[in-house]
Length: 310
Image (cartoon, rainbow, N blue to C red; front, top):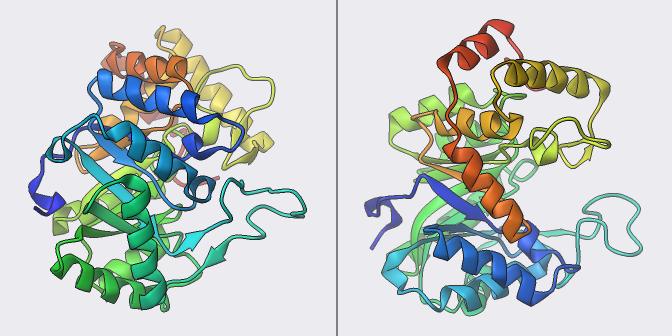
């Protein structure tokens, strides 16, 4: 059954942080178990996350569910050595040792490894991952995913990116079913809005990740806020402070406003949360239930906090 025929849950679990090598298997799987217990039935992962650790951990935890009960998404095109991070020992810059390969052979091999790690015989969605600098080469991977879809191994074909431009280019070049856009539709960065709305009008399913922009929007104040996985620049700190002031005026936690801002976009099918602990999972789920007065959205809109990325 294609993932396009399955009702996608509004909230999903993003498993990037659950592939961290400094997180033990038991603690990572405890988060997934808790997510299942609380009703989460959409799971997003990738070979990149811990070089396969996140897929292995997710596969073990999902064994308690029947396969038709959940939507499973992974990715292909880029990975790293097993049990390493974006800054492994010896690296002088982030992602220095990551390996990109969108060839047909590498795509098929990646999908087969994911099936094994995830303990399943099919994947509802496979995204071409981090395509930004590989727009032509990744089309080889797309053609192989089409063949895998014909074989019943892959349900839907998507794109995973942190930038709207590459996604817009690719959906004009080849037929896609979905995409995952991270950090580009948030209270701080609305650069992905036009793409999301256009894709929705074409019938593509949109998954939104990075709703807290890698941490800066999760809570306020913070001692060392991060934005896009690096220390937040002064302009982002200042804008986040302005958002926090408005949220405080309406007695709404900034994290609740950040999450519900994305949930309120009807063109987005599923919104990912990415907790590292059960406490963070429960905080995210509580944030989704906070009652937010319409006046806050009006104030945030009038304040023109963010029209595009910083």
